[in-house]
Amino acid sequence: MSEAFVEIAGDVSSGLLLIADHASNRVPADIELGVDPAILTQHVAIDIGVDPLGRALCAALGCPGILGGVSRLVADCNREEDKPGLVPIASDGHAIPGNDLDHQGRMARIDRFWRPYHARVLELIADNAPKMLISLHSFTPKLATSDEPRPWQIGILYNQDERAARVAIPLLEAAGVVTGDNHPYSGRLLNATMNRHGEANGIPYLGIEVRQDLIGDAAGVAKWAEVLAPVIAGTLVSLDPSP
Image (tube, rainbow, N blue to C red; front, side):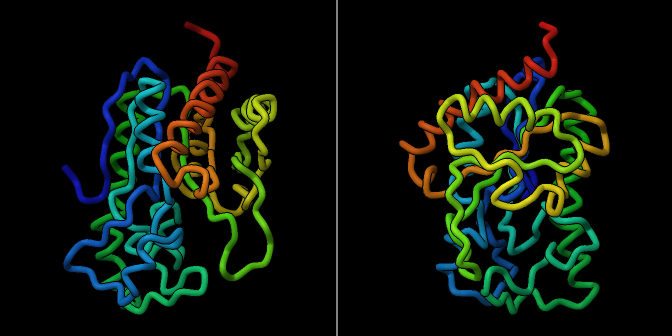
């Protein structure tokens, strides 16, 4: 057991590993962020719907998974180690006063949460040799600090490695899904976990962003698991047609 992550058991022979950096809004009792507790229910603290959707996809695909174990306001595992946003002092207009830490305090957060999480991802990749990674996130329909609408139902994100994206986007569009190609933001700008574990290892990855209002309840989770599971499976088969 680790406070930095939760693992979902699955069949290694599935060829898949699901990774969800922002699946939890948990704040350990000994950490005081100094924010209104209501903020912990919002997108700045958690990728809404990703925990149940990740579990549903792992069940449908028979694959293992790893879910981040604390709020992204405690430690954002989808940031590089040297980036200030790893321990954010503000997010989408909300100040996080408890994160105004000195160097020692920042490193303590990194050592306690970020390092164990990424170390375990590395171990799972080394032990399981997945043929494709699934990076699962959700996004808010509208940022508080922007007037730009986000109409996509699903966004597929990528940086330099577009292999899985080029297969999955047409599959989603054929299923009638309003799909963003490197939207609602670009994986060329923010792709830390997949850069580290996918691109650096030459492993194809499918970066999936689901609009959070679509998966805010059990019915939505079930619907989108049913939509996404065959797309993920079809993408893997296209990339690796061997049985």
